[in-house]
Length: 353
Image (cartoon, rainbow, N blue to C red; front, side, top):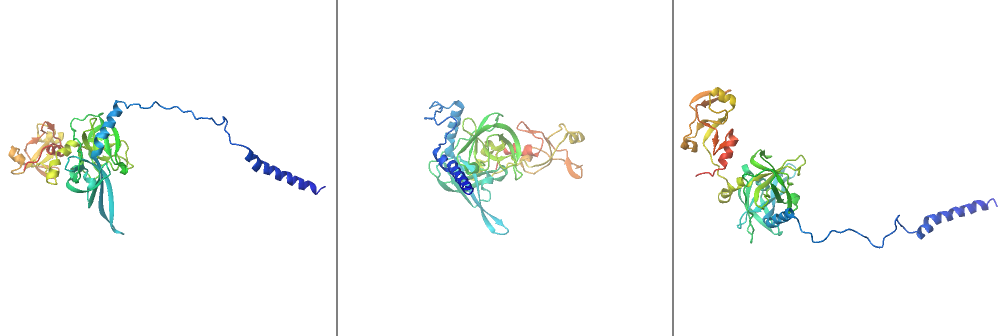
């Protein structure tokens, strides 16, 4: 009897284990607290809603221009100490400006490229030729031979107002045909990574990322008002601050880029020094700002216009200068306080051969 009790206990325990782990589980069904419904009931929106006025305009701007925005792939070769010549590839955007296949983009998109390829919105690819470059304005013109091209409408960037609606179309991170929107956040001069300055750059909060460079910035009517070029970010992608080159800057040099391959710069033909209130007081000048003409290039534009350089020797610190020359305070009604102001005014004029 004593030997039978442990045996019976072992059988009971084995049976209980089998019941709860195998048999009982196979006889039960998974249910939830509420049971399974016979049909799922959901709330759906009414179909066929029409976009509101702003959405309709967004759609219109995109459809009107997407066929004119291109993806640009540039292939270059860089030297690596260990591997020698190493092929490199970069991407950017551009847009068609005439039916002859001229495309406007950034200089840095195609800089040092040995081969440039353009992909249209219909995914057709074409080998492109670099027609003209303007490094100081970060602009370039390339050209493709393709049928039925639709050029974009170049608008006006003068008198843009902070708060105006803008759109950016491009290929951020290689994602072609991307539209973002925002406003004009500010108009200011900014310095590009290579040290070049963009006068009256259009600052916008429209998302601009790597790959957007060279693409168009558009106004409410879908007209190009700028060329997206740089972003201000610590992480290399959109942080809500992007900049575009004003389209008027590009329009002023397009003819030279296409016909000459470079840009002729107008020159006044003077050497100047900027005037501060302290210098103006010491020299007895009639204005406490401007550029004092130290020397005039014989036969230059300033000489022909009657401007005169200095005729009295003096020192500015340890630097010898000549005083007594004309003082430039404004050109075309725009105040001139330093050399950058003078360059900006001059660049708004075509060079005369």
